[in-house]
Length: 219
Ligand code: C5P
Image 1 (cartoon, helix red, strand yellow):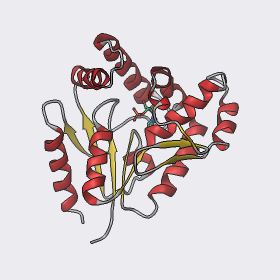
Image 2 (cartoon, protein in one colour; image 1 turned 180 degrees about the vertical axis):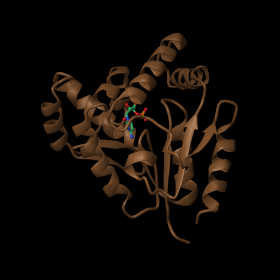
Image 3 (spheres, protein in one colour; image 1 turned 60 degrees about the vertical axis):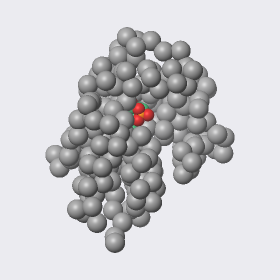
Image 4 (cartoon, protein in one colour; image 1 turned 120 degrees about the vertical axis):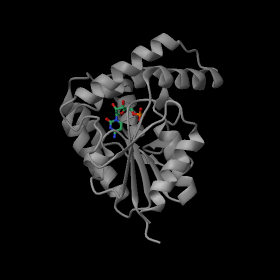
């Protein structure tokens, strides 16, 4: 059975990473969270207090960063574990600005294409089906209502003991969607040949089974 590439795109908090991890686990594929790469760079930009409009400095910084994702879902920057740090609010609320820099995207896409070169990958993000792996054998576009996405993120936060405000989450998710969809360089967009799944009223298991059934027709 040949190994394929599976691209999972969609707006913020649509459940992409939860689903992508499960699909990868079922197929014994590698899971690649491309959002974690943009988050890692954003974390370093904030830490080094670089201006958000200084594209050149931000790109130079990226070139010094070795961003590694391992199969325990941990993220390392130059061998330092930043798995939790890259999920903080400050990073979440600035990442779309950094991700809109075309030169940053070019470099990230290059790295992501190298990671996908051998197939056997499930990659999630915003531009995987349109730009990173346009020839992916399976392309999924996951969507859900803003209300549902905010509720899911809110519940997740509460479970982790992180203070959370549902209305604020809605605003932040909408802002991130707007910036990701309106940017010039490879915006968030469903690929023409992607299959859209609306997860608003589906369970994780339902979505998983639907994707596995799509995959089984390809391999
Ligand atoms: O997937 P996650 O929500 O962690 O992604 C964080 C941000 O990284 C997104 O809101 C988007 O701005 C950016 N991103 C991107 N392209 C990708 C993955 C993430 O622009 N392929």
